Length: 58
Image (cartoon, rainbow, N blue to C red; front, side):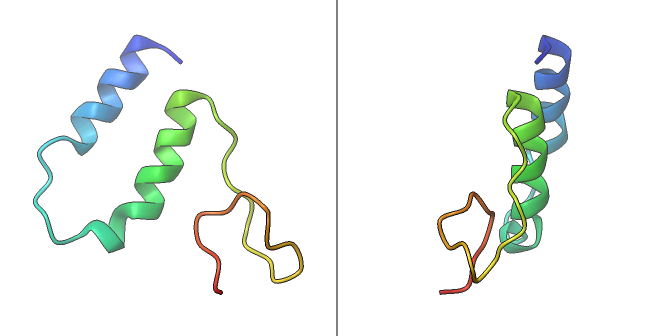
């Protein structure tokens, strides 16, 4: 993670108008994982409900 990457991420997402949170949350979280150096979530699966995923149906 570099300071430049963090600043670019902040600039990209700062000041966005509200109302589009549901449309943008997956993109935001994917970019955030890249910036902080965490692995991206795996695709959701009905077989392995404990996996790290952005969204899983109950």
